Length: 286
Image (cartoon, rainbow, N blue to C red; front, side):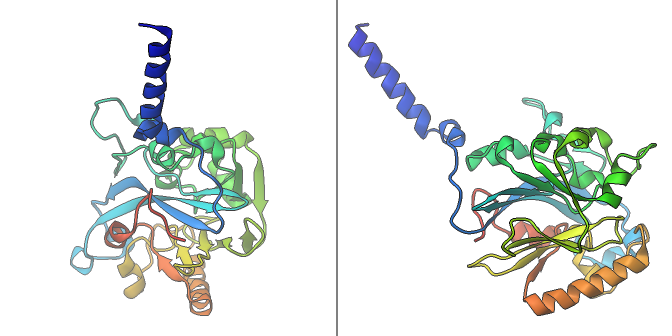
């Protein structure tokens, strides 16, 4: 092979790789001009016993729960909201979909980020609704981001002995992360009112939800576990496993007032049927 032929071959291979899914995944995405909301498929939960939600099987459409993760792309940074139940480290090449407790996942979060040109290191801010195991599975992946958390929640996460409702190994790296301790009811993440973390205690000590103002779609409110099944809202049922039932009732009432005032659409994160209809990444809402 001549030097000219070798150079031509190298150029051709490089061009093919650049156009391939692998090559495209490595291209760095550019900051958006306005807020974008990406929905990732982070698995599902098979809830065998729904009695703790004060619901009967005949009252609900399905006992299954979705486990979505969200990336909010803002001109000033990137926020990961919720990071799944099953950590990416549980995936094995050629193996069956990994499980954790009642959770199963078929896609890694990192691969879904790569599909839109992002690496975990590109995430500038991290927050989740609360510390329970099905929301913090990949928290360690984003230990380089600024963690937005309420002190009451952080105290529970790093308490000894650990809470049986979580998996401390999956968020242990956050102990030394850059941390913003949220003290106000509302925390404006990027300072322009488009991405706001709102206090809704009750399900856990420092439970919170996320308001995202989108230019085209309109405002949406990501519920965390303020509700699990939509029937909790329509039938006015409160789970028996809440940290503080009265706080949950008050948080729900306050959120209803905010939804009416803001005209935001409530997305119940665990709503299996509604989540299935959402556009998944690489598509997005803006």
